[in-house]
Amino acid sequence: MKILTKITIGLVTSALLLVGCSDTNTEAKAEKSIVKPTITEANLGYRGANDLLKEDVIPPKVEYGSAAPGTSKKIPRAFQDAPPMIPHDTTGMLPITKNNNQCISCHMPDVASSMGATPIPISHFTNFRPKTAIKGDKILKNGKTVKNTSSEKLANVSIKVNKDQHLYKGRFNCSQCHAQQAKNNLVDESRFTPVYTSPDGASKSSWDQSKWMKHIDTAK
Image (cartoon, rainbow, N blue to C red; front, side, top):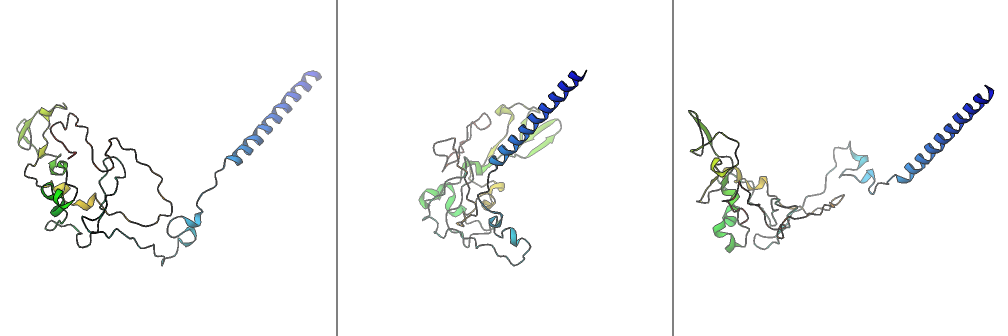
C-alpha cells in the first residue's frame, strides 16, 4: 500500500512540474509575440490621446485641388467601379440644386469629348427602379405588363433607358457619390492596394453584361 501511495504522489508531482513548465513556456512565447504599435496613442487622430477633452482643438485645414476644369489629371479609382473622384476645383459649382447643376454642362455625352471631360455613362440615364403599379390582376412596370414571377428572363424585367439623355433623378445630385480628393497628410496612410477586374479599371467602370443587362452598355 505504501508503495502505491509513493508511486501516486510521484506521478502527481511530475504532472504538476510539466504543467508549470508548459505555462512558463507559453508565457514566454506570448511575451515574444507581442507586436509593438507603430504609432503611439498620443499620435492617434488629430487631437491625440492627451487632448480628447479639449474643446478648442482645431484640425488641420482640408485642402483640395485647385486646378481648373479641363487642366487637371484624372485620379485613379479607389477600386473597381468606384465613383471617380473630382480632380478639379469646384468653387462656385456646389451645392447642386434642381435649378443649377454645372456638372452636366461639361460631362453630358454630347459635349464631354470636346470639353476633355469624362462622359456621364448610360447607367445614369437609366431607371433601375421602374414605376410599378397593379391594375386588376396585372402587374405593370413603366406601363408594361410583366408576369408575377421571380424569373430572371428579360421578358419579365422592365428597365427604362431614357434615349433623350435626360438624367435619371436619382443620379442628378452628382456630389452624393463624386467628391473632391483632399490633399491632407494622413496620420496613418492607407495601405490599401486596388486590384482591378478589368485592364482599364482605374479609369472606367465595367459591367459584365449579365442576363439582366444584355441590352445596356454602361461601360461607355
